[in-house]
Length: 478
Image (cartoon, rainbow, N blue to C red; front, side):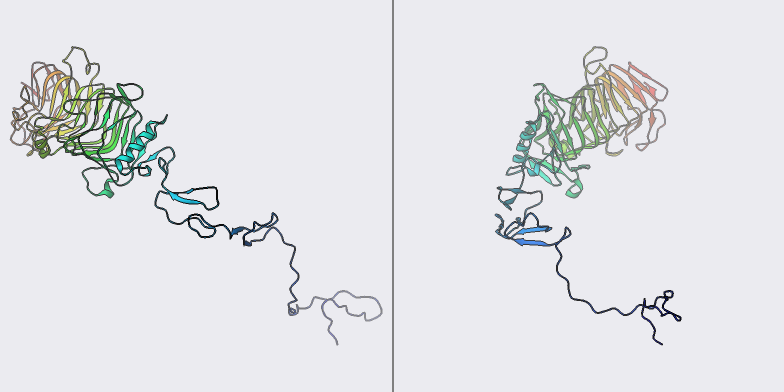
């Protein structure tokens, strides 16, 4: 019998009527491929690239048209932009002609909007670049900061500060003691003589400079260079995460104090190896050395600078100001802190409000390498000294040449003094009879005193002497 193909009907057994559709058979093999049909009319999905001289018609839908007739002015190669360039450069159009461009260093711009990268400025050397950067910044209504990169900069020309002067290195602590450039990030070495940054008056007034900020830089000077000085009052200055090494002096000089108001010195700071007393400041309403501050100078620098008996930190008529937890080392011919101002109850600056020093560490190098004389000398004003470590001095009190001669680890000649919650340790060989506080004038209060014993054990209590002293039972009053 014949098997019908798919869809064929079986004939009716009995007559001319049609029967029901049978089941679907298996799928047959694929047929032969037919001829290619004509091209379609095109649509919106074409992905072709057109390379030709003429611009494609408006109906063309190429993804890319390469103009084979255009030639780069810079490279001479058809349809290309110039290769090359160096880090920090920009590709700049030189005319309206297609591909007319070259690599250029853009002066006075930076990768951060509103700031000036020193390395992008025109100039034959770092001094010339800084001159141009400062001129550009000072001329702005809102002076932008000047940014330094991760390298060693070399300057020598002295500068006058303008209101809003801001100099910032690569973020992080700048430690001038370290020679590894990768560690110090941004280093500035200043040569020549005189004062590098002078506060001689800004645009607000000939007697004031406002809003100076210096951050994240390790500064190295020389025995003939002062970092900052001048006669104007610096208002609202911020020093942050910086260090100074090998300067004649850093803030002010022995002859002239630097005047500061409403200033903030914070972060990680180091004042290291000055040839003379490094810091001489006056003013009011400041918060200084908060964070970690190290103040130290080797005895060789003292000898070279002829600085016998000078103080690392001279607070001269500084009132209503807070000094944070400094770590100050006064070894050999160096002395630590000098506080000066008017005598007690006479009026005048530094008696309108106290000077607070809290949580400090003030000492000779160690018990065997002590300060010759007093660690702290109070000659006027008003000092509140709290929760501070004071140690290792008075091994040769005549050597500093002070008048009157140093007679105690804290020597007071005038003013008002509060010493509370402090710890005192003697240098090796210094007797217990040498006073912790010696008051020859003014008014003093001593309380809650503790002892250290690296310099030797104690048989009694630290001694305090003077007619103007009021003390509790943590000391022996002589």
